[in-house]
Every structure is written in structure tokens, then in C-alpha cells.
Length: 238
Image 1 (cartoon, rainbow, N blue to C red):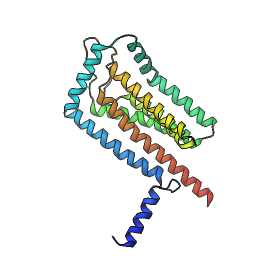
Image 2 (image 1 turned 180 degrees about the vertical axis):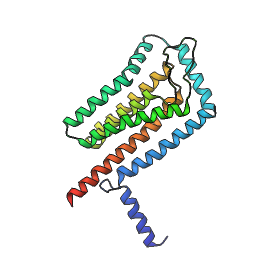
Image 3 (image 1 turned 135 degrees about the vertical axis):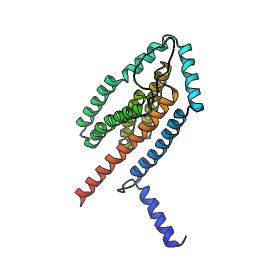
Image 4 (image 1 turned 30 degrees about the vertical axis):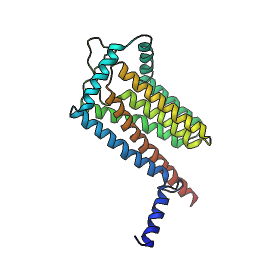
């Protein structure tokens, strides 16, 4: 590689890693995360469809939790899962949108308006595409008639808490707050995912696949809105 090509390569990498660039760090990171999460989802979906080892593992875990369920953990898990259902997440998303509106943060408000509805529409399409039955038990803790793959509750919590974490990470100057936001979002998503598996509403692969695709969708939305904001800001400065 000659010096000219090397210099071009350095400029290209620099542009990808420059936060202020039109196609800088925000877009590059979003695309990288999208590729990674889509690949993960595809691998899980193929393994589930082929009844690979993961399907056997799914059944074993589901049966173990159903056999070893106990109070008061069951009641706590039911509370967590109901709080993150359609009604709960709709109310939470509406409150978050209202908060962004009061904060005069139009681009974050736009993110809320496209992240949650878009993510749930994708969930419905995926459920009907794969049509995977939910776990079956002699004495189920929770009975649902819809399909299992991927988990809607887990996807909704990933999108909601992930968006909050993105906002804090992007706007807070404190590293402690940034790390705290990321940890809080991770714990909440894992807690919701665990509640779905514990209650027998989903298999382990259902919740992992939901986290994967919803993280990718969140990355697309954040990158798109961020690019829109930067372009409009650039036009105003001209």
C-alpha cells in the first residue's frame, strides 16, 4: 500500500470515528451494532428452526423452572412481567415522550415515536413468520395463545430501557451516570427476560433473540435520528 492509499485509509477511519462528522462515530457504531445483532438473531432463528441443540436446551430450562417455581418469587415475576406488558410499556413510553417534550428535546421525542411502535411491529411480523408454539406444561404458571418467538416483553423492555440509557449516555457529562444508566438498563432487561422464562411464557432463545433484534432496531433509530439532527444543524450553520 503506497503512501497516498494509506493516507486515504487513515482519513476514512478518522471520519468514521469522529463524533462530529456527518457519517461519524454515531452512524458507524449504529451500523456495526446492527450487523452484529442481525447476525446473532439469524443464528438463533436458524438453530430454533432446525431444532438444534439450543431447542433441546430451551425445553430443559423451561421444564426445570416450571418444576422448581416457588412463592414469593412467582408473584414477583408475575408483577414484573405484567408491568412490562402492552399497557405498562405504552404508558411508560407515553410518559417518556411527554418528558422529552417538556425538556424540549424534539429528536429524542422522535426517537420514542419510532423506536417502540416500529419495534413492536417487527415483533408481530417475526412471531407470525416463525410461528413457534409457546412452552407446554401440565400445570402452567401463565397461559398465552400467541406465538413464542421472539419475546415481545423482552423486546419492549430492551427498546425502552435502551433508549433511556442512550439518552443519558449521550447527554450526561458524568461517566458514573453513563455507566450507571447502562447497568440499570441491562439489569432491567435481564429481569424482564428472566420473568418470561421463569413463568414459562418463553424459551431462553426467545428472549435472547428479542434482545438481539430490538438492540439492532434501536441502533438504527438512534443513528437515523442523530444523522437527521446533524444534517439539519449543518444546514442552519451554512
